[in-house]
Length: 97
Picture: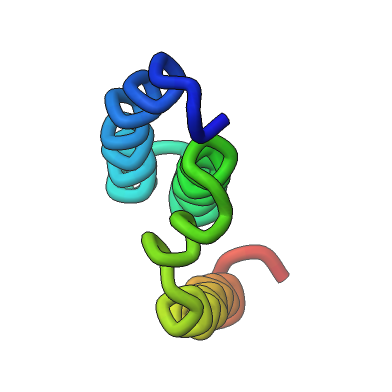
């Protein structure tokens, strides 16, 4: 698909809006449904879309392996914090027993 000009132009137009929507879902999660997992899936879909259109080598340049590894570590840390807060709310504030 590297030689298809129309796909490359459409991808360059769509990918920034997909990333912007992922950020919206991430930060809107505080006020309604949505949040980290959904935003991560949308952002990963934009990287996969980029890789399909421009090739895997270009996608790896866009998102280097060190960045992927650090984001995985941050995702694990982010996942632990809400679970601890939820347990605190249930057991110490008088929620369900």
